[in-house]
Length: 173
Image 1 (cartoon, rainbow, N blue to C red):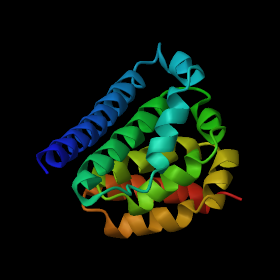
Image 2: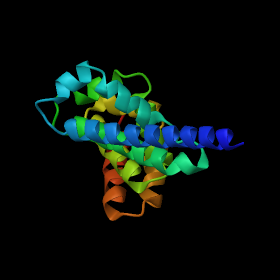
Image 3: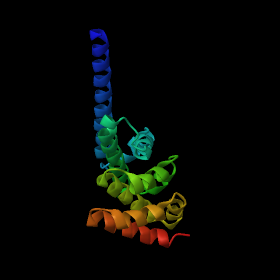
Image 4: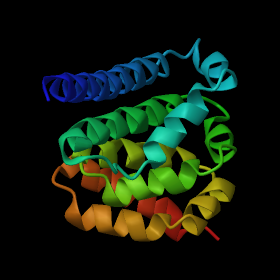
């Protein structure tokens, strides 16, 4: 019985370390994506794909891991937002990652943390500045997400981002 308790403790410790490592690594990538000199290289080496996959996650985890999963998703949306800021071609790069737009739209609509929703909206705003890409955001469900975010967001900043993004989406084909 004592041996089983030790095995369970080891498993729980591994899960906790894994979740913490994912959170820290995602946060580090988000920070690096804010460096204009590194964005292109990070994207070419898979960081954009990794952040998009995490941003698209539905925060499904065991009850004790849900906070870490939500925080990790928030860091991933921040990384995508940082990537899109002042980076020519960022919209094309994000649209080129399978599931990235859908993940950002879902994060803006349904993420547990307000920060994830805000950063997803900011990334989508950068993408929607180009009408051809705005149409792709519409196809991914962006209008519905931005309408919900505009009415439900806790912060004025997030509501304003949703409104700006919605304006671009309303004008999209």
